[in-house]
Image (cartoon, rainbow, N blue to C red):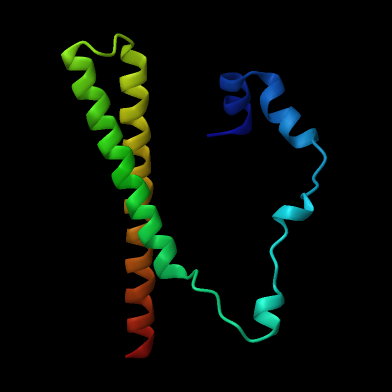
Length: 115
């Protein structure tokens, strides 16, 4: 998708405003590397990142399913809310599958280089 098509969808001010903003990071958001300098390891790792992603996708799918059930029972009258939840879950699942596929490709490439 090109920048022009994104701007036409979001309006001309959406992307240009984002690009014109001052790029500063609040001090609270700057990562603290003092633990790494002391030799202490943090428990956040790639494994935790992947399991968190899987859990978030699972939660989005359950939420979409719950909204669909609520819509069918008549508890939700806005079909847009149901469709948005379903699409969020679908996009998140597609992203997760693409990440999985890329990881498998990288693993196969490393195994091929090892042989």
